[in-house]
Amino acid sequence: MNILIVDDHAMATNFYETSLTEVFATVDQLKISKAINCKEAYHLIIEHAQGSDFDLAVLDFMLPSYDEQKVYNGADVGKLLRKYHPGCKIVLITAITQTLLIYDLWKTLHPHAFAIKCDIGVEDIMQIVRKIFNDDHFQSITVKKSTMKIYNEKILVDDHNRQIIFNLAKGYKVKDLASIVCLPPSTIQKRILNMKSALGISSDKSLLIELNDKGFL
Image (cartoon, rainbow, N blue to C red; front, side, top):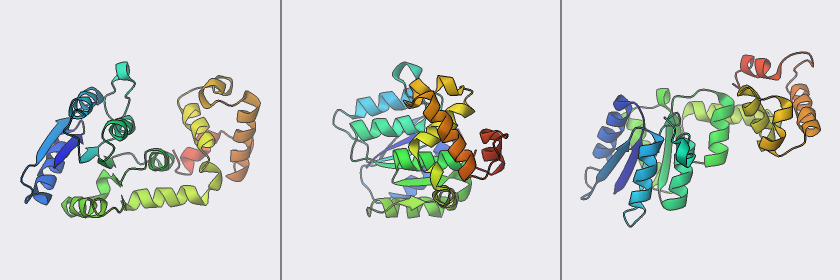
């Protein structure tokens, strides 16, 4: 059993290592590799792709980036694992609480297990491992609530709409988004108006402020 843990907090990596060592206590050849940033994770993934594939990876989302290889966070690390270690079970455990980002990570990365750190304990790690190695998926309570909240606001399920929101939140202007989301400015503006209407936001109020107030950002 070959395991990768990627988290920049020593307390978290030690917790996962101890928990997984207990879970796989009967496994003869258990090897756990650890990384504290995207650069270390990238090189471990590439090195182990030469015949010692990872079977399980536990990833944080917010990580120091590796700009040189365009690996900016745990989701990008997960995509690398999908490319070089296609049989690897991916567990994303993060402290983020933004509803829209949680849904976006579930939709785009679709990890085998997705949990918010404050939701889980040692017994949950055991449950996660048991579920994913039985070809099941796991969501912690906050992830479940977040995905259901987005499903109830159907306009936010749309990938383009979420990308517009995320990039507006980064400070981009509508005119700058065309090359990012691959839509003309007029279409982007129309989508923003449609989102405000669907979410019951008056036309003279900021979409981002209202989304934040409603708990989506």
